[in-house]
Length: 281
Ligand code: UTP
Image 1 (cartoon, rainbow, N blue to C red):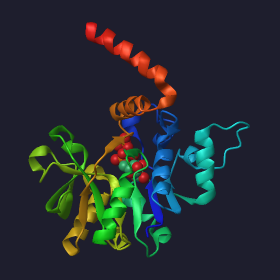
Image 2 (cartoon, rainbow, N blue to C red; image 1 turned 90 degrees about the vertical axis):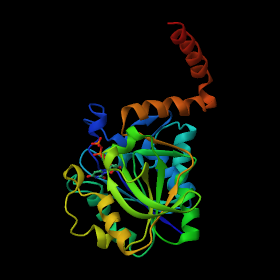
Image 3 (cartoon, rainbow, N blue to C red; image 1 turned 120 degrees about the horizontal axis):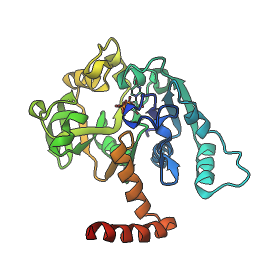
Image 4 (cartoon, rainbow, N blue to C red; image 1 turned 135 degrees about the vertical axis):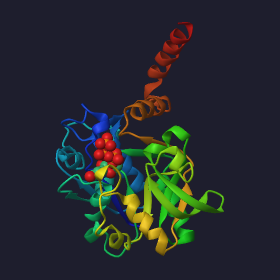
């Protein structure tokens, strides 16, 4: 039913400097693969057939990564990606200036046309698939659905925070949204997490948006206007989400995902010994 995904991947990546000085943060490796490959695979495994990746300056490596590999010998992760690439179409468009997520999404208008679409931040991994949970919720509510997570207080200033009414377990009717508030100003401890299902009316709300938090055009500000006019729902994601655009989260993602990986049993054994050393210190 939802066949299109939009992946904004044009941000600066200042939190990952100097790693991101000359390479896109979406190419940050997480165990076997760059983060954006996880995002494309999440889309593909949810039935998406067409993907638009929004890139920009210094992001050419992202486009190259989604060419068919010409390596003389391929590992199974490369073969898997080649197989996916045979089955979907990936398009690219360049954001002319890095003016914020809301501005980046505007570049998807022609691609989206009149279909609902999934919006997936290109630097976030979810496991199990958050997109699948959103699509299941969309089947019931048939309206815009925003993925949510319950946050500890110290994380509130880093997220869009919602005010909402729980209409059934884990589903909120959203009444307001605020981008990165201080905890005292936050209407709740429930934040957005970088996965959305959106209807094309969004583009009307993105037009003529003024710069908001941090001087950037904010997607949250468009959604904030939208909730005044129509019913929009939030779904609390049940699973693990990693923001790879943050150094600590990136390190944690590597450790947690490697521990689940049968190819890296030796690493697990090494880590256990290391942990014992640390505990004895
Ligand atoms: P972030 O909030 O992580 O911003 O963007 P950023 O600029 O990429 O990174 P920092 O904060 O400087 O470290 C959230 C998402 O929006 C995209 C990013 O690529 C990321 O997927 N984005 C952001 C754009 O595509 N264009 C922009 O102008 C800004």
